[in-house]
Length: 478
Ligand SMILES: CCCCCCCC/C=C\CCCCCCCC(=O)N[C@@H](CCCCN)C(=O)O
Ligand SMILES: [Zn+2]
Ligand SMILES: [Zn+2]
Image (cartoon, rainbow, N blue to C red; front, side, top):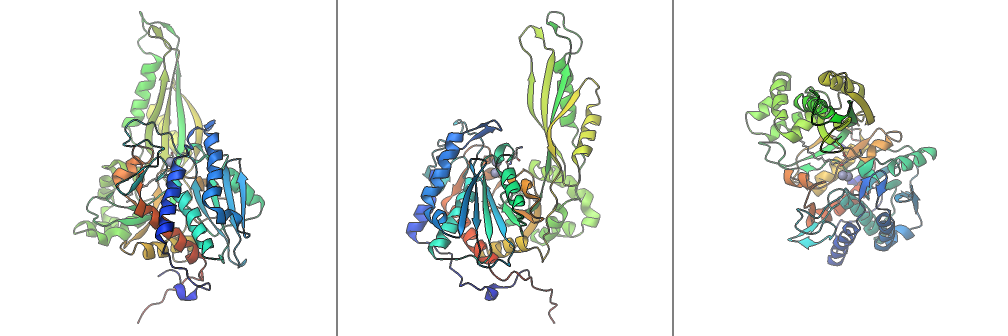
């Protein structure tokens, strides 16, 4: 079901086969990208030298993209890049592919190879950014370069937006690109960004991997808690100090999880779609969530990743207090990072947090906050979702299920809600729980084969987006 088949495509289809020389060149290009340390430390502290070098690097390795007459390149916010690929059929609504240039810091400790070496070992390319998110960035440009070399002329216009500060907010990259496109009156059919994968081994008893396309994204609050007390000599301490009061408050937050919201959001739909992939009796349980919802929601809580899908999570991430060993400190501060479930709002979570802390001596300062992202359509008429489904089925024929999900992290795509209602977060890569831990962790790596497959996926996706977009009506076979 979904979109019409390729017989309705107007341009001749270019097979997604690459020569040995091209395959070597594409992996070497990714290694080069990993070697440029485009680290975002904080919104104020980016490695601008590396970001500038990265801009020159993509010019060098993707010359055809930059010299093609129907592609316009613009630098935005100094280090972000916007490509406008003018399609031959202006009646088709354009879409946009996103990726980001920056990476989180990677101290050498714990890595098998230096994190910015881009070294290849046992069929894997190692380094910060190999999964998050230089793989997507390089694969998008690589696929386009290869299509152009084969004289492909897209029918449907599309944009490629490469943000330079996603890891610290996206306000100078994605947000500026979004404002620029809005000022030009652009409305997009859909957007594809990072944020989900072909998940392998995340759900107990589910033997086969499935593709999760995230149609929403959790909201977030960074909440700073502060206690001010009278300072004094540590030889005669008061009964309670700013540190003790604050520690007790954040401990209450950690020990009191936000409510389980299973049933709201896309997760329930995904589990129902997956039901038949489970052995008995799980298949029966998941097919009858009207009865077993309480049981399933409890089971989801047991694992820290699936727990993140059923509730707003509470993470204590910073704690600062004390100025000297023998001084009772006047101030203690802690920061709590909440990731808000799609069925809750910033205001609801703040109220719950204040009720849990229940101490008037604590001041609350919202550093920044945003609500969960709207749920994008995933029905038969949803062009972006159906194109992803179609391309997943052709590039990964062994994957039976494509299901909608919620992205537990945040992505640059949240800055583009003004341009489209169809935002899909999906990386065409298999992800196991241990590789999930490597994202922002140690030994982040991608197999050479997985990267080639990602290039192939985008190569096919761009062509699928040029096929006749009319959805197939529901036909009931006799
Ligand atoms: C029933 C299904 C089981 C699903 C298991 C879910 C597994 C999760 C898989 C993938 C999630 C990966 C999320 C990757 C995107 C994260 C991007 C990111 O790190 N963004 C940052 C942005 C920071 C912006 C500044 N505030 C973040 O979220 O911290
Ligand atoms: Zn990312
Ligand atoms: Zn990241």
